[in-house]
Length: 279
Length: 252
Image 1 (spheres, rainbow over the protein chains, first blue to last red):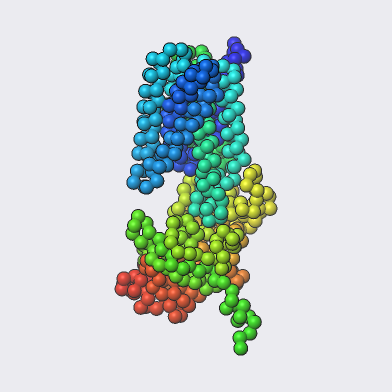
Image 2 (cartoon, each protein chain N blue to C red):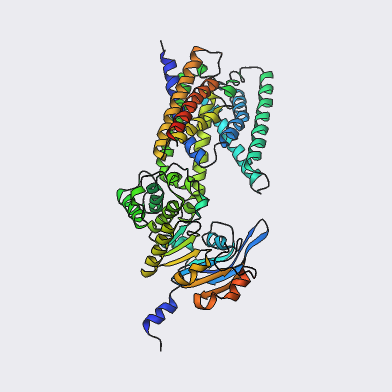
């Protein structure tokens, strides 16, 4: 039997997967998918700092909202750092992402070990943010993450036309006067928000897979973007729900790994189907 | 004493006028101090590889950082965007992108629609008409990766046509296309000219210039020659631009 709390967590993870599929599709087509990896790792120092601040203020150290806010702040700082690093053109984005990702993650792990020497429960459960643990999520946590994710999917849907134009042909979009910078910023913000929403369930190391794997699977099957978004959302939701279910049944398996393995099964099937179709 | 028509023509601002346009890629100048007024009608922009032909179009449209000024119909681009259409090089996009030919052409109608939600039916119909004008009505729903290179080039032409502009900046639409596509593009070109529209086309096949264009701009990092074909398209100018090689017919 599935309990009420488990059901809410399942639905939250499905919503998260849906949003990750939709936002990840745009990120993939814009060539920005790997930024999710940078954001995920850059979030760790923010999570640790937020938990320390909340504990110092005498608040509830396990409350999710402040931790996600902290994650968003340092995730955004990571993106800004990446932009500064690559602005001159001397450091390419792949090297820039590697530098930012490892620097912020190292900072976060140091913060974690410091937090663990402090008295109190400040660090309790923080390690779950690294690999994800849906089983430990409360109903309120799942609702928060799910609502945030669905909001991102809705915004991406509203921006469908201009985002598609930008992803296909940036030069033409700019020549037409589309607000390319603002659209790229919106896409980055959506990517950041989905990554942050995915941290408690999937974890920072594997959240990139939730954005990339369903989108890549859908890319192999769909001839048009609306179909790709629908398929990616469906694949993401399936992977999210399956991973969360596995995590509640086998608590020793991190949710992030279960979600990603479910997604990879879908990816493999899509690759086979795409090959048969000759796409 | 000049009559009214002549006066109006003389006073009408050029479809494109650039002043002191300079572009550097990593310190190396790709385009040096280009000052040029495009005449109305069909203009071929010629020059060897790396002469800055595409760069001129991109710099005028603000797509690459440039010094100098570009004015369209006497105004900055922002003020007259709807009157200017752009056809980038075919190789500049990923044709495996999940979109149909109609999807791509319909992108030209975005500035006429709300920024959110679906494109109105009348805008999609306008895109469909543009596809028909280049002979692609029957492949409108096909994924663009399944079109031939020439058909892809015509999709780009249809997208530019769907912008319903008065000036068309085209970057090598005739590069490596089949005979049907070349004929279609040249037909569209003359149709646009007959409607009083202007085309600036980056182009590499010197053999087509005399038959199809009114004006040329010959570039080699700077302006080598510019003006009516009869005056500016000379062996001396071509030799100067293409490094003294007898470049007729070949020289992209």
